[in-house]
Length: 229
Length: 85
Image (cartoon, chains in turn green, red):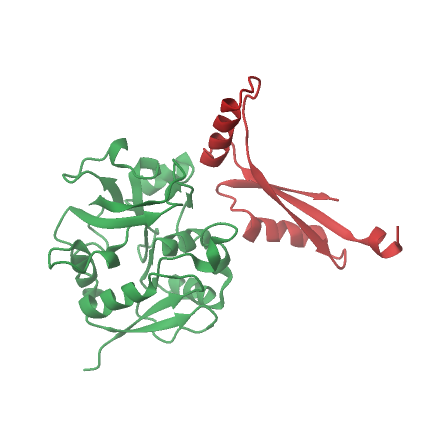
């Protein structure tokens, strides 16, 4: 049987698309198609990734200009049909700017670019994207300057009540407090899902946690996605 | 002043953070001003503006409002205000 094909949308300034491509092919056991932002159709619609980087130089606001790309218009259309979509880092910023996910990702609390390994607690294991990860706390690298998740108090409560918060920055043993929060995100939020549970956005980079050993948590993240296809 | 210049239609769109959103850049600027020895500066907030020249006044304000809320600002975190220059 031919391998299934997963789409990765690439913008001018994306820089995690190749890493993601390698991780997806190797650990999801699929082929990939890189879709240029100017394409108004996405041929392979089983699953779509929006990679990290600095789309359009992060001009205006991170992710803002990418939202108007023809490929993103198609992503928005397909999202309404329930296609699984994952945005990582700049991809998460793009999905919030498109209003496919709640909130906004703004300048880190200390206005520094943070680049380090961080522990992340999986707050909701009952999602398409996290149900097969066999750990409660994973270690993923983070690398961003605008990762502070912000939304209104009402929205935050709604996200918590609907179990839409999927990842929170934590300690190794899953403790969630300010000392583990690298960017000032509300409630330590590192990743959320939409209300219909088919769109995931996360700031950490699972595609950068696949290289060094079989224990790397990015591997179980991508392997866990195989059953989506 | 020539007529062409006189007839230029320019609008300015101001964007700033909504109240209550911490702006670490403005805070850092404020701290630097404090360190320069100024004693009376209480608070600084930062924003940006766009000058937009238009070629026809048809639907101008409606279009500018839409452009401002759809792209130039993110209504979750920012306010905008449009003025005629």
